[in-house]
Length: 347
Image (cartoon, rainbow, N blue to C red; front, side, top):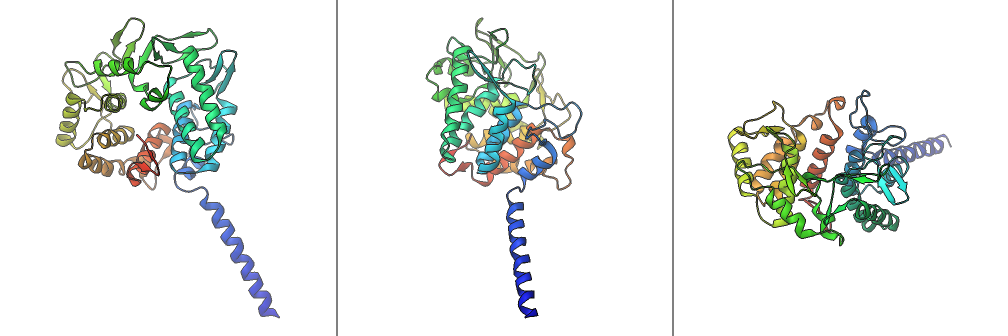
């Protein structure tokens, strides 16, 4: 009789252990890091794990949604969409907008984040069989088309308080997937803007286009930011199906000779403008070389990416920006999946 009771107790303990293990498995890896370091008890994502100067950005929630869809974490994805609805959506008479930062005073959006969120919601509606995601994506895109379109181009942001849009387009904001599927925009105009931005004496791209004046502007007179440059280069390949030759040659030479990429460069002599490297730069460089079918460079850069601070077992997340962390982990997951996730190509 005693033996039977012991067996029953052992069986109960075993079952409870299995259930607990299943519970813990729901949050592993990246999701656990986000929960422990970046997420608040209200499901908001902090831009930095440290408490000072905390912001809750549409950039961050968009990046996390992108990763969660790749990881097929339906439960966490739904929680973040709920957070998006609760903390970021601004319903106005002329449309539904996404605040670029979650504060009561915010009255502007950021199209780069809107595009990413719209794209991922549409893909999630298919992957998770939830039509509410598609409905929200269409609602958000309609607001963009109705309020931010200038000569067939969606400009950077709109202020719904004063009902006024900007006249600029940051080329790093462009999302070819959204542009390709949006019937309201002028795809040829986008292609021309991207192509003309590369016709410079340096290998770098112009970063900003004034849609009304039809002139290019520089984000900085003397330097370029490599995150922006790589984002534009990726869009260049998508829109032209060609490699930006001058940029491509310079990027390869920089990597081949130095074995590293810096966060920014001087326009005049092409020397590093900053002393630091960036995990987001390496992640974007991997995406760029994957698009240009340069497998050797992809593999070499991937080995460098895995040595970045966010992959350290004892990483200090208080010093790692969520933007850099998510780019690193997203591209690492794409690399593991050979850049294809089931039927979808992620680029």
